[in-house]
Amino acid sequence: FISQVGDFSMALSSKISAGGSISEEEYASMENLEQYAKKLKEGLDGIQPDFDAGTQKRLTALAELEAERCPSLDRPADAFAVLLAGAAQGIADPVKRRVAEHLGRWVYLVDAADDLKEDLKTGSYNPLVLRFRVQDGALSEEDRQQLAGTLDGSVRAMAAAFELADFGVYAPVLRAAVYEGLYIVGAAVLNGTFHRRRRERQAIRKADTNDA
Image 1 (cartoon, rainbow, N blue to C red):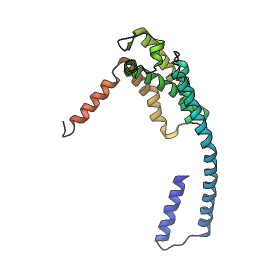
Image 2: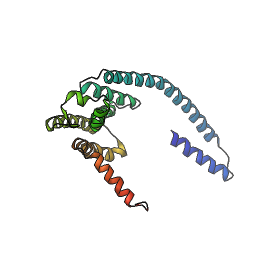
Image 3: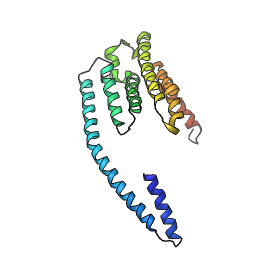
């Protein structure tokens, strides 16, 4: 709608600049756009309170689980998954919302794995600390494999939902993320190489400048 209004405005501006005048048909189009804009605003005004209330409710549910130091992986991860899916409530396709939900679960658990050492130092809540055996700031190989299986399960569920939805021109990028990017990031976090790779990339970028 915004693109349509922008194109229409540019066309009218060019016409008037060239000495033309606005036709009756164009006046009618302007009135139709105005009426549509009002309906769109009413619709958004109706959604926003529900979205705000729903988001606050989901955030509260997640905060309560973390405050009570819930030892389950599923409960806080699923709470965050519902939170992310709720952010996509404006998307009409329920299958796409399922993609967001599975992504939310994956993000929560990968973030917990990435923050493991820091959370151990600070005493911050981390479900991995309560669920698995942690030695020297790291999971045992057995526990790491179990967590990897959980993460892969979320990605597989995400991929199944992805194949059922039409993402248009964004499909190739999203496909690469779902089938390659998430696995690569997850493996790097679990292997402890995620931050090292990031530091190496930063060092390379610095070497390409005059500050090196």
